[in-house]
Image (spheres, rainbow, N blue to C red):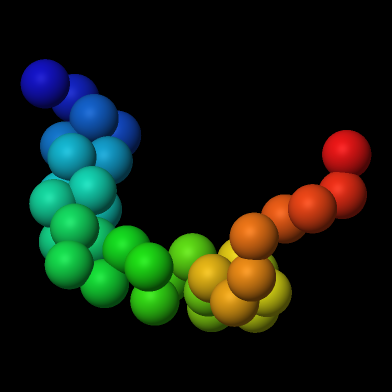
Length: 38
């Protein structure tokens, strides 16, 4: 496994619990209401 793959796996594993918080940090509206556009 190369370093990039190892880093990706580590990032996924470390993000399992705060995944929602991370998503809201990246996209502040992501977790607040269902998307109705489209």
